[in-house]
Image (tube, rainbow, N blue to C red; front, side, top):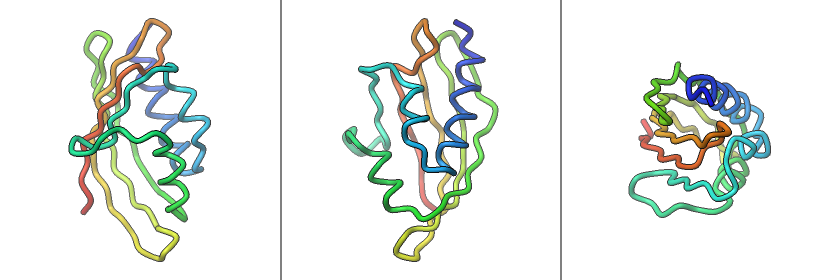
Amino acid sequence: MDTGKAAQRWAEVWERGWREHDANAIAALYADEAFWQQHPFREPEAGYLNRVFDEEESAQCKFETPIVDGDRAAVSWNAQTTLVDGGTEDLVGVSLLRFDSDGLVIEHRDIWVGR
């Protein structure tokens, strides 16, 4: 497995998937028992993507080139979302990832803040 290619694919699919609210495309990047903590001060939440996508009307986002070391990668990103209630969010974050031998994410920890 080439971690650089797996991480770049992850960034590209997430960028497109977030814009299109395509939770299935994003979910395909993860191993079945992957750990994903969406924020360092929150417990992992099953169904997180579907809940968030239901709250968003639209999203514009940009994922940067991954920084890779061994089976791990860090990817910085930013997003501007419009919520269904008319509000907006400006987000900036970093996703810390670990990949298995098939190039699927087995561990994902996000650190982000709203501006």
